[in-house]
Image (cartoon, rainbow, N blue to C red):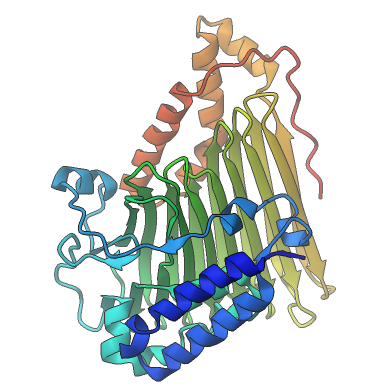
Length: 455
């Protein structure tokens, strides 16, 4: 069952038809993939809570809103504001406003020879042949409605190509800003990252809002990492509190490749992140780390899938949530171990701290194991602040709120400590403490101890 009425499908059809002129300059193969993706979206429609993957996340507010593609914005952003949003990072920076590249705000500097960091629209026009075999290879829109919608409508995005053996000392920052100058506007950023053999790089994608109207950001990211590559990826979601954010990330790891991801989610009214990693050759490894802090009526949903397709691969997942008010969290993590993937070592954990009685979490760790020589564990905990720890701090003259903040920070600290980029780690340590100071204190007389971890 889908939330796809003739009305909202007709709206998207009109939007798509009206954009064909804008896409006419693109290579024919791009237009063909857009048309295929729109056909798939028309057939799939928006998923509803009747779909098991969306059982706890209701997209009806998005489906009913008749979002229109945002036009190019001429908004100016002060240098001081940009530096704040740059998070202290000094490497190459591409900035997009409402889904469109802004060369005047971006800063590429001098890139090492062979490294390509370009906006995707320009890259398709000038070097489409180099992209054709990769775009939509990992992020195939055939069976994913939101991914199909992104493929049909993406305005722009980033293409990053790192040649074999290249080690980048500074991170590449992709900053996406939404102006929300008019209500019910949507942007569909698209990222394609190709990391060659023996390469090493860090890429940061961050999302911020600049306006007060309702808007929607719907992203798609494809990453292909060659043999022995080392890739660290950050996704920072700090949209406005009335915004919707949906994102799909697909990663492919080669032989002896290491991919590390960090998801930091603080903003948005309704947020959904889907990440899939395929460990496609022996010796590959991935670390998936996540921290989400929500309040009020915010809703955040993380779906992860790690596919151990070959033997001797390892994966570790740790997602932590801090929830207050009437906020809700969802974590659905699945590990697949294929029949040939012997000697797999996989660990998955989701831990959640509830700061109010009305906050709620639905967590579902899953294992699908078709091999017999593996070591796989998973677990999930949901609980409130420990009364004994609180009493210990209070007995030493620390106020209730300060004690709560210290214990909450300690809960989240091991996620922050995993962040290798010091400016980002420092920024979000301050962000978390600032968030806590603005969260009202709730007296908890019946504190619930964390549930025993399931394995």
